[in-house]
Length: 215
Image (cartoon, rainbow, N blue to C red; front, side, top):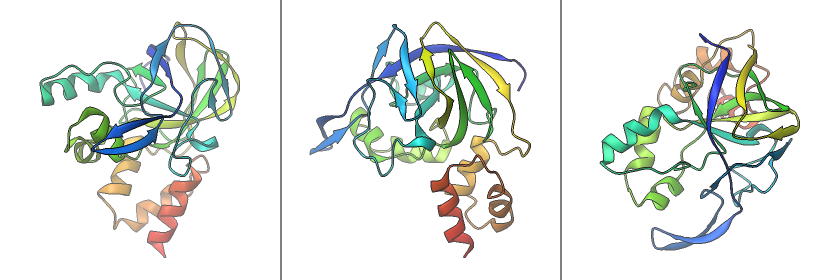
């Protein structure tokens, strides 16, 4: 990590609504809107934000979703179309912090709040449904360009004018990309899985997934 401050491109929130995705009526909080005012960030997420599928989204380990602005050019080049922020359902569109450069357990000051990186975002069908691109979910899985979740260590107000300030690194280094690879590509690497399970700040749902594979 070569600098301490990162630019917030956009702060985004949205409540679940029923929408037609791939011919089915689905309740989803994927579609969010940019906001400029200060928003309270609690242990479970931003005030005014919500998730429909609480089994796979939300909760203490997945309070907020960050997505690198750096990837937007890739998607626009791949599909030859504009992707308007927040195209990937993210709460924070952030510049300069990709899945390769952020690590499980990293802590950041975010306005008045403090957040900690907990796990990669696991792609779901709603990405394809919202954008009407059948193969994009598979491509997110292939590239690892899914973004990542954070838990909230300290609550506080956050605005899009704030910067994300690096605060603390966890002693064991597992990047978001390396965890994504273990989950989706390097699925037989039990040695690495056992090492990753020693990272206290890894999300509990990921720990359960890896523990089942080892057994």
